[in-house]
Length: 560
Ligand code: G4P
Image 1 (cartoon, rainbow, N blue to C red):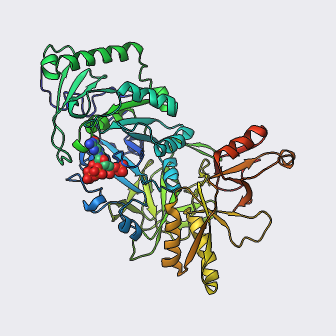
Image 2: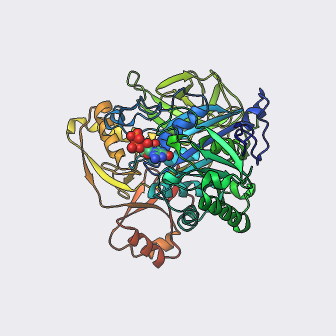
Image 3: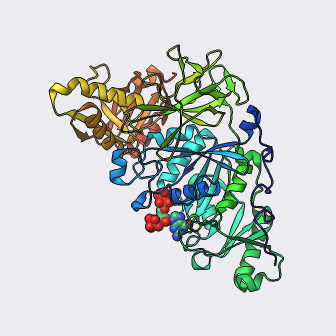
């Protein structure tokens, strides 16, 4: 049995590369910069270990010295996303962060999605800016509800999804059972890249099916802040029995044989289409398996992808600078009370102070003070490439889904609104504050904090507010009070589903809407149905085959 150095063990960069990459050079040209970027998001259910994994990824990227910087929870340290007062008070993540870090010649942009149960539409919108997703699963819990929702959005976008089964140092489900669960619940076939040896107290490491080497787990203690040691050998090693125990060695050989015969190959095309998910196993808290995942992830995950526009696909290598606004965030710095529009660069080269146009308004602006965010620190961006995220501080100039570009005007498509799941009406407590109340609600809706639904053909006075995560109601009330001086009361309404309606007028005329459905219109005048239960929604669909109910809608009028 040989103890191999990480490089020899196939850790950074030696796994078969499924996308052409030249990691050894340090490209100064735009094409090289595109090739080395990976822009991704982690999708998971609360408590699966996203914060812990993010810390460890940053640790391996050398972006932080000690793991623990991201997790402010339970007073560990200052959280990178800990901007909002409310967030500090509650110790949860309300806002998303964008973290950039280098690894093995690549530049990784990690779009951090709010993971608490009360997540928001921002979580979904962030996925629109990602080129791939890393799905984190608790080995004992399997696929949980929030993971399912986020997976669904990634699936609709058709982006590659990588899976890490976490907490292998704890007893969990059988790995074959987890593979079956991914297929049954999510409809995606898992192809293990590494395979675990035991779990819980008997977790001994993973077998790398690509390099055919074994990575053995040394318990460095929970929360280990150093890098996890890695040792390797291979399955033919006669010392395997002594190392793992007779039964574990036999089971491993058996499992691998089964996977090799009955399993599916890791087809890059199928990964790219989101048809199969490369599967990893590890333990984020002890660092185990994180670097193996990272090294293989950068080899398999795609560089920045082209995006659809009204004038056809825009490719990252095109010289004109183009990007789209996927998130607007206010009050990140309590001293400034400003708004930042987060822009995902799609093509070209961004330089500080450059002039660019917003084709929606036709206005050309100088993009001064662009920001890159790390922790609560802001750093001015001098330049950025496709895949990068920059924060633009021009107040009021941008709305969600806006394109920002140089050269001939283009407008990106495919920037959706997502169906809210919680609804309520806000009552303004003091009539003299009516104007501020109206202005506040309108501005918060433009920022994407809330969606507004109105009575059909009626004055738009007291809209129904719809949010994806119910914490957003508290965010709205908090912001109306602190920014607009308006006190409000919330009346919850009994709906839990919203769907945009796509149907010919004659179809609509003949529908019997029944109880538990309310028809309203959105800000753009699109017909929307609010449902009290999934059963009512499904019943309506079943009875009216010509009625199309959409979970997402474009920013604007839904095409008929
Ligand atoms: P989240 O951001 O997805 O909500 O999860 P987070 O990283 O905060 O992790 C949730 C809990 O799971 C934490 O424990 C964390 O330490 C633990 N955890 C994360 N990865 C692993 C792992 O690989 N193995 C084990 N055994 N535990 C893991 P906690 O008790 O809530 O917090 P703490 O006191 O440990 O900080």
